[in-house]
Image (tube, rainbow, N blue to C red; front, side):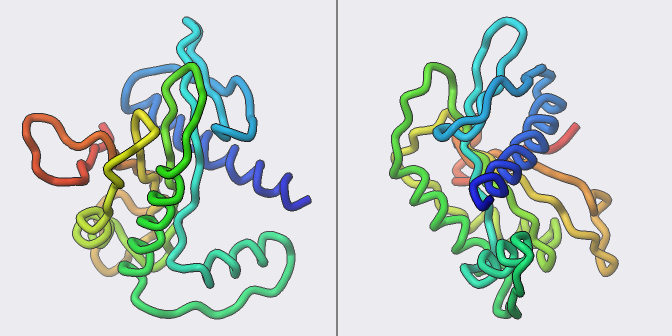
Length: 187
């Protein structure tokens, strides 16, 4: 049951990411298979493969436990703290863990860190979270993306509330950008 729930979660996150990726890069990847490593394999009609390893970002371990408990029909618990810092720390731990692995996959493999932060809006993602993300020096992926299901912000609307946005974390920006993290805008 728990494996089935995890696989359904990975598939939903991967499909949501690949839809945004296809729209941005004008590609047509479709799901070929779901497996252990990488989690999902997408393919174009011409046979180009793209493997996705899906990881989910939470504010902290407590939120992860709470969300998975709720998804399994169990009681969750309260969560508190500094959301932006906690989310960034969790993302950095996921990056360190995932980048320590190696993959034998014939196509390009992409790491997708999927986040649904309910307390962090787009301005905070751009201003606090993205600049503090630390991609390890050795990366077994062709690309790394942060995919965020943006919460609805009534205080300071950005125009993207309730949308799924992706930011490329690796490789670093082009044209000599010094930033570790490069933001990719949706068209």
